[in-house]
Structures are given as structure tokens and as C-alpha cells.
Picture 1 (tube, helix red, strand yellow):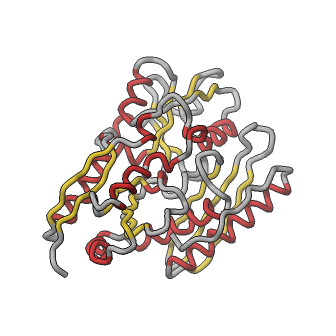
Picture 2 (cartoon, rainbow, N blue to C red):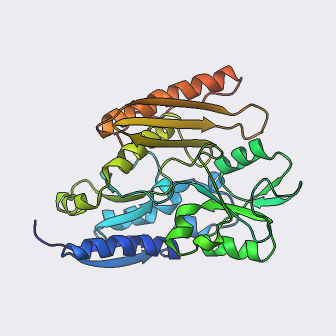
Length: 317
């Protein structure tokens, strides 16, 4: 395969630039010439409202997709948990890279763990998933919105606006901020979001040479896991407006997925399922995720909840 000249579209936050530069270095090691096209997305601009109220996670990727469509960029690097479950026609995930730590992190300047927070303590997060899982553990806490990039969120904590905040461990570790983590939530305590900790690379489907260049960067085990996780979200109609978690692991060819749904009003008990099945390819991984979603909907109905309407079936990622 001949070497390519590649432009990567990226958001301009410090974490997004780290991710794009990471992919840039890996591609350059393989002889390609790579440059970055920094962009500001609507998701970066709107900081006074939660994502669920202003259009969801797609706000972080739309401008990057326009750059791909117009030929100003050849690929876009995303935190996979920010990528909508259904991509526009003509676009696809060409590569899922090896996952960083998928867990959520407890960050506080004065408290070591969630359990050590006093009643009424203020915890910052704008994730509905984290909100319902935190409330299930500590209904006595005040959960307050927290938007902005990673540095902005940490600054708000340092300014005393929160007693603690919850962030993805992966982002903190990638930026060398692992020392800010006081505790990590094991998946059994706080189930991660679909795709959390993984990087996905989006391309136009009519760029086979770019897809081929990305193939060596793909991590099969991670891709199988996130295919199952994203299938759960897709089948549930998953978006920022849904408090949904999904996390899968692969062991000796068997994929195990845990999925959970929480009532935003805090009235119903948490719905949760676990399923396992052999998974050698993306289609079988996605099929397992779809079955887990069906079981989760049944559990929601059994608890008296409103069952989410599934989206139209999509591809395996």
C-alpha cells in the first residue's frame, strides 16, 4: 500500500487534540504524511445546558463530518462514547483502537471516596447515566450539572463549586492527570457508557485507501466489546437523553455484556441484565448486544417503566 497524505479533523480541546495527535503519530510511523485540522463544534460552544437538551452527542461530531464530506479532512478521531449510534449515510467507523481504562473516576480535593462524602454534598456530572447510578448509591447527595472540557471541569472543582466530580478515567490518564483520581468506580458499582475509553475513527465509506491505512491501528478485542455495547444503545434508541449503561468484556472467545437503565425520576428500581455468548466477529457481538437490549426492555417493563422504542437496525458497529 502506498503512503498517503492524510488530514485529521479534530475538536480543539486538549483531550481531543491528544487523541488526534496519538493517531497522527501512529500513522506517521507507518510512513504517511499527516496534518491536523482543528475545529470547534456546537457541543464545545454550548456549555450552559445539558447535552440531552440541545441535541445530544452528535453536536460533537457534525462539523467534523462536514469537513470529511467536503474533502477538507480524510478522517476524524472521536471518543467513541460521543459518537451517535447511527452514523449518516456514507460514513462509517473504519477503526476502533485499543481501549484505555473504561471506568469512571471519582475526583475530589477533600474526600477519598463516594462513600466518604457527607450527606448533601454536591457532586458534578451532566451524564444522566452517572446521575442515576450515583443516586442509586447515594440518594442523599446533590447531583448538579457539570459541562465543559476536562480542564474546565477540574477548574470548577478547584474553585469550590463541587465537593466532587465524576469523569472518565481514560481522559484523565491520557492527559497525564491520573493523580487527580481519588478513586475509580468498578463496573459492578458504576457501569460505564457504551464505548467509554475507546477511540473510534470515522471516515467516508468511499475512501477505501484511508480505510486500509487505518486497519493496522484497529484492536479486535476492543472492537468486539464496543460493537456489543453500541448495539445495546442502538436497540434502546440510546442517546444523551437516556440513562443507559453498557459494558462488555471478552474472555477466551466468550463475550459478556452488562447493561443497565435507570429511571431519571428516581422512582423505579435500576433495571439490569447480563448476557454471555461466543463472539468471533462484529455481527455476533452486535447480535449479543441486541439480545441484551431486549432483555433490558423486558426488565424495565416488569418494573413498571416506559420501555424505550428501539431504532431501526444498523450495522454491527
